Length: 366
Ligand code: NAD
Ligand code: IPM
Ligand code: MN
Image 1: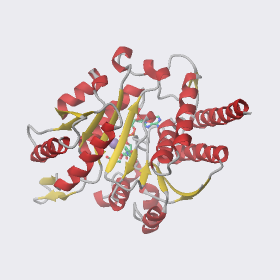
Image 2 (image 1 turned 180 degrees about the vertical axis):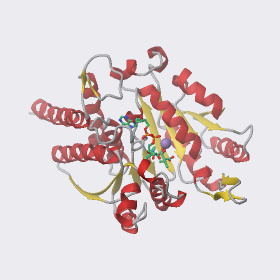
Image 3 (image 1 turned 90 degrees about the vertical axis):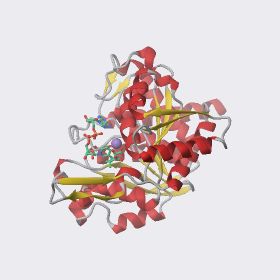
Image 4 (image 1 turned 60 degrees about the horizontal axis):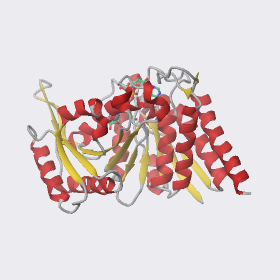
């Protein structure tokens, strides 16, 4: 199959880990007889430097035509002083909104060799397997007004949601729970926020259509605590935009590093943008030590969700597992033994495991 994939490397380690994803995807393509054509476009700080805007029209047009999109990360100190509407982050928020990517799937699945790499006790982390479904195109991130008022002496951000925006994300969450362990935790702040009270209403209403899925409501403050004290009690978590942003970085602690987490930002027809959960990591950018696995696992999610290549996606995930079993790890993972390597070596280890597996499969089948 010939697929057109748009690459948006962005800033900082985004550029470094995008090279890893490309290498892994090219390897998968040659093992499975596909052709992936990559087109790189500017976004974030990189686009501000080149075109004076974080989201050029050319990037939007390319994304609209693509079979799938991969994004590295945006942001960095260089652009921090710019006004809110031309910051790098606006590029990312803009493309999510423009493409209508309302559902952000963030699987938090630990790998056995990394159990001890979490600062949490192994017996707490063991067996945790969570899917956070974060609403991605509404809430405080997009509500208007969002500005300084009263001559700069006050400020307003707006938490605005349409009921229909809640319904579609909650439905996605029930559908996902149905395919997993059939337990849905809806996280909100219904003891304070009107938006959360409507959210709860929507969840309760939708739950009538999914009698096979058990539903639990949880307030976000307690939820944040439970996530790292009793993570195995969760299956699918559904929550609004800002809560989902915060809880997913917190949940990454279960896996040993934020650098491990992939994500899929999708809409109902399967069009998607795939991006690691972490940012541009200015503190380690340019050093060649970034963990590429969150990005590589995002490429696997892209194959599964947008390109219907389940077997190929599994192959990448198995290769990642194999590398970790072989002891390969980057500096962000506090692994006791094994081989600490940089971004390139880690990527090569993944590629090596993909090609080795294909060779052994073909030997078995002859
Ligand atoms: P960050 O996620 O970039 O980094 C947080 C910490 O995690 C840092 O110590 C970093 O070194 C580490 N880390 C993150 N990814 C890693 C990886 N792959 N390998 C090893 N270590 C890794 O968050 P931040 O420092 O708060 O934000 C930096 C910039 O990134 C900001 O401009 C922010 O807006 C932006 N950001 C972008 C995205 C995105 O593009 N999707 C996501 C989050 C933050
Ligand atoms: C994420 C990031 C973004 C968000 C920022 C960079 C706009 O933190 O993807 O988690 O808050 O959505
Ligand atoms: Mn975030």
